[in-house]
Figure (cartoon, one colour):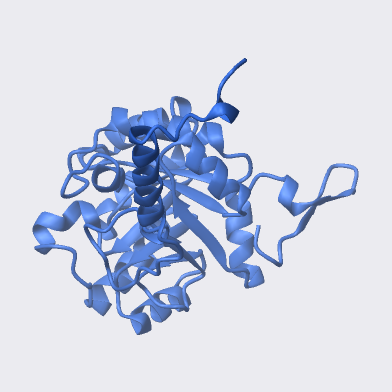
Length: 281
């Protein structure tokens, strides 16, 4: 995990290097109190999960953003619970130490608290998630309380909530300070162990972080949040259909892949591949 949480004692009092241990929900809560900044990225399959996990990411979110970056849809509203379970299972196979959090997709928790518990339970039992994430502030309190009472850890999500894109009229910065502070306090009281704060002015991100005791994971919410999350496809330059201002692109793998495939196609067509070193004798 990040610097500051490097070791934990086993039952015999022996200090175990932090990097050999899985990240847990209590680790998230402890990080806030120790001033340790948390890192989180999205993952949708075992290969990417293994790479991100190996690089030291604290948590992997199996996001319903897969509707856009994997399935090619214009938003996340069409993603089903079955699809989320499938992708969560893949990520759980690839992760060794990162906390695996699964998004609850649209209409999988809004109908009733009972529905919310049943579907969250499926993500844990069938998807092998360590925790679930759901969107909404005050309107989602009943669902959060029901899931938490079933001993399933819940990460909240306030600010720009992508499942509300039709009501919001698009992916827009959220500026209603009074409502968002009330949302943050409401879901903290309901029992979330952390909350994503998306696309709000940086000053509001600071105020929300100061108002709650649980970690805030920012995405377009400024540097004062307890941690940060990005969509891995954005960070790696694999998705260019939507380029929010808050994204920092750390690599340009999209162009690298295109160049590699173009070279492969040329060498096959010109008879350069396979060469003798790639053949069996």
